Length: 115
Length: 114
Image (cartoon, rainbow over all chains, first blue to last red):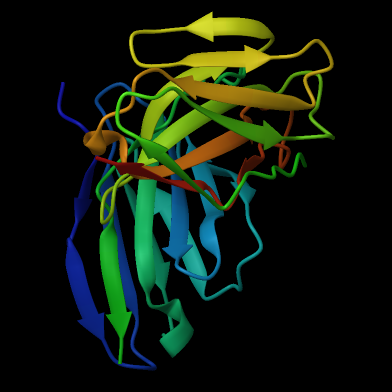
């Protein structure tokens, strides 16, 4: 089985621009969650999608949004980029039937640099 | 929302057993405890998961006391390739809209010394 694929691997943007990141989950997985990782804050939960519906959202401003398509692929969008948005953005997929004990499979991430 | 606390860093010599403890005092009844390993510039990788007592797989053991307020990841005979950040994650049970919570701690940076 192919793993979780994130594209692009690296991205450089300037302040005020917007960016879209893509995540293809493991085949058959219906849950995709997104995380921001920075040296200072560690791994922070952004949001999670299951069957095209956002099930939960972390404490991030509305500039961070996402969506999931019918094939479970997900995109994350950040508008009006700020310097502090520079981070490694990770996505994870799981089969997530909602019964607990979720095992997350992570992609390698997209390293976003905002100049 | 169960918050986790781990040591920031640990050093160990090759061949030794390493135990990393995670505190999660307000763990919920339906929360699982999961440990992940992360190398630089990569996503975390699942190591082991448990709910109570002891779980063992081919790479690690997980010890969970009866009150479930802490857990200990045990890595037998570590090698240089085990140098990584280890995260304890509590949660994962979805019990209604907006209640799916995942909390990653700051992680423990394990350095294995030759």
